[in-house]
Image (cartoon, rainbow, N blue to C red; front, side, top):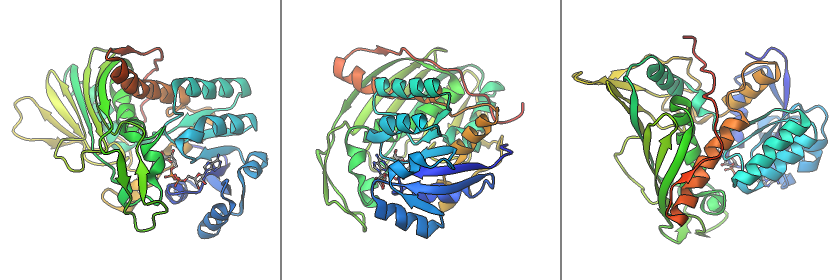
Length: 367
Ligand SMILES: NC(=O)c1ccc[n+]([C@@H]2O[C@H](COP(=O)([O-])OP(=O)(O)OC[C@H]3O[C@@H](n4cnc5c(N)ncnc54)[C@H](O)[C@@H]3O)[C@@H](O)[C@H]2O)c1
């Protein structure tokens, strides 16, 4: 738990901004002191709406010496460049997912962190939540015996129906693989360890998307990245993961994440959320058992609160004080490489062997 006050500056005041403000408000040691956006009017409006004391453009945020931690909520194509700028301005940085849009760019952000001696953390942080930690505890305690396989099915977030400008979700850095894939792969890597190789096929579904969100600023989007992908992830441990990541599957009854072992099956709720029931069914058991959460809940399940964000920022603040850094850039880079490999494998028709690896982050529960 962080002890000192950390002064937070938020870069990017778009759709997700409010969910960070309400999520960070849970941690009195994290104080938002400034918001910066290339759209200064938007920064001003966000500051006024959420009582943030200072606002301005991006340059003013980088230059603000009162900011210790910069939380980067810009769209993915801007991540690498803005992360490097913020690190070079002397800030510790937490960036939304994905860390960057290519592995090379991702590596450049880690290099900048090493060069400047600042810490770099990245979403997804939902693996720090109660559901993923409960899953990890169950796997580690042998509840399903030896893990053999896993499945992850990502349905459509239907962003066209609620995001004012979801164009970035259908263009470079977006698509279901880069937008939703990070949550699922992070939770699998946290539970099962690093990925060794990826084989995949992907395609664009509908090439033009119609936006129906009530507050939309665009009516249609030209799709330039695959919106439907199937991939086989082979983990270094030998576990074989089957995944479907799609913005073309609007409705499905497939489970979000399951892990299959020699002695049982674990079933997880949507990894986009921190909390929810984790269920275990041992071979031969008459029914599923809902496991006790291994750590405290972050949101209230089934309410808007569940969508709040901020655990990863607190994780970074703890690390600044010398604690373990779990949602760190090494972990995020490995997740990014696994996801970039989906497209590479699909294009080449060959399995891609990953260059990066990572340790499983330290669990949050006490054993
Ligand atoms: N919207 C969601 O539900 C959601 C959920 C989880 C994660 N995320 C992630 O959060 C990030 C932002 O998503 P969003 O939906 O809020 O996007 P958005 O497009 O609604 O907002 C992005 C904001 O960043 C600003 N911006 C763009 N380039 C900038 C730059 N170089 N410097 C400063 N400001 C800049 C834009 O003006 C805009 O206000 C993305 O990485 C996304 O993957 C979004």
